[in-house]
Image (cartoon, rainbow, N blue to C red):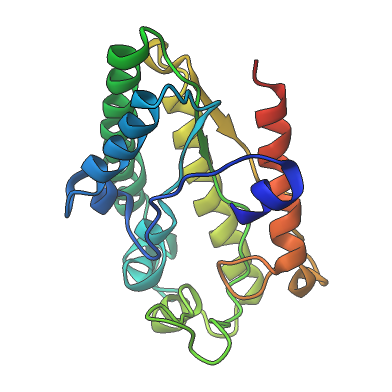
Length: 233
């Protein structure tokens, strides 16, 4: 979000933690309390945010959990496991999102008398090429997708891996799109980031590793956020 400040003139307050699942954000270690306390502090200072960004879910479907969503390549039911996908994305992740959005909405209504716009976003089509952070950066070096595919027998099935990731990303985005259609979330804006970054032969110019954009890629993603923010009253 630094680019929103440096290139678009927005001041950003962040309580983000690298690697957290959206369930952790909703229920664990006081994170939702920390999030709402930061918002309340701004409101007490008569600072009304133009929007509140809730970002999460990527770590719920990538990493050690990913292989659970994929049936073995040699199984008669190869491909994504639809039952697991439904349980993780359509139930677990969705309910955690609803918990966070509801808490933030109540706080804003209580403190200001109205709803403040909330932004949520999906993810773009990642490429499961086995790249993690260069040099094993931090405590989440990656890769996050290719090991799961390798475990389930998809080592030499590049096009199949790409298609399965695309299906999973579409499923996540569809969950968010459906969620914000609820009348209680009419103030929640969904940002569709699909096809912002390259998914083709030149994808490495946009993707630094399996999950995170390059500097140029982040610039393009940030521009999508800025266009939504600029359009808000």
